[in-house]
Length: 116
Figure 1 (cartoon, rainbow, N blue to C red):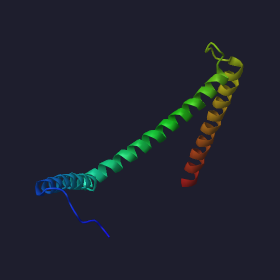
Figure 2 (cartoon, rainbow, N blue to C red):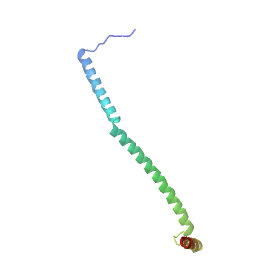
Figure 3 (tube, rainbow, N blue to C red):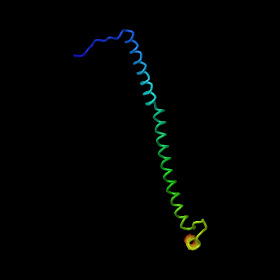
Figure 4 (cartoon, rainbow, N blue to C red):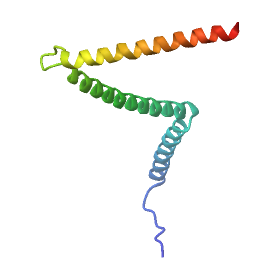
């Protein structure tokens, strides 16, 4: 059987009830703040911002690593360009740009002839 005897005085019981009410009121206030739409939106925004920052940080590191790798192929330890690697790439780029320019001129001329 349960012991139902209470040795507290009525004043002690009332004080205990007041303390429990205060704790309950604080808990309800905290829950009200947690479920408030502004709090929920703020938490969601913070999570999205942290995710974006994390993703951008990883992307920056990846791009920085790639650029450093490419740079190291075209420069020596002192930072001077390696002409034996730069010149062929430059010639290739000039050639591709020239081919694209010639191709676009030919398309432009053939289009004018058809219209006449």
